[in-house]
Image 1: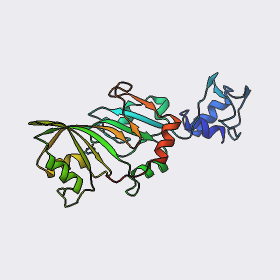
Image 2 (image 1 turned 135 degrees about the horizontal axis):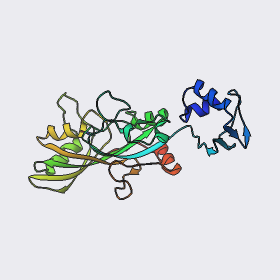
Image 3 (image 1 turned 180 degrees about the vertical axis):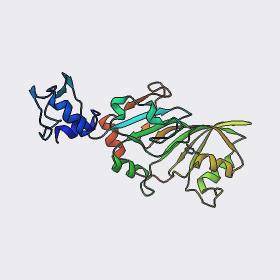
Image 4 (image 1 turned 60 degrees about the horizontal axis):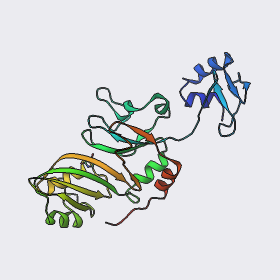
Length: 242
Ligand code: URA
């Protein structure tokens, strides 16, 4: 890849900015100064530095975030904060985007990547991987709700949901539950509970396909890169029938 493209990709500005930077002689590949923006380097094999600092180049970035409430699952917004605002500059330069959406008030597991192919694969209706949520519900969640969610419930727009697995953790005037769904309709979990006359008062995603949120490791608002094994597991993730 051309050195100017590589440096622009990791955040050294436009190609024009990079050209100026190269002229100053601070960029080296394997110890040799590179001034010509057209020179090709192989970031997997060559050691590229700028002012002596190693450039850790990768094409794709895969992040696992514990999303806080109050942030939009979007890459930009004129008024509101987005999950991208939570990223360090060194990660933001790869221009990752959220894989699907969590509502502004929903917390929990959110993947971010710039790998459009993997994102598409995880969200496409044919391959939709299961997603599990923890929720607090106003109202008593019952065995009938479990049966209704297994069959599919009719949302406010007439859509009948695919089978979902509902597990009651505690039941009372307030209940806590786990729910696993394989679709991603707008406000899906909230609307499913509305369909059975109940209200979600707190919602947190805890798993997506093979990736499980470990809240000891990642506090709300924190994120980390996925390991290569985790990315591979996501690539291999298969749709399931609930
Ligand atoms: N279902 C919802 O209602 N909201 C979310 O953020 C995710 C699933």
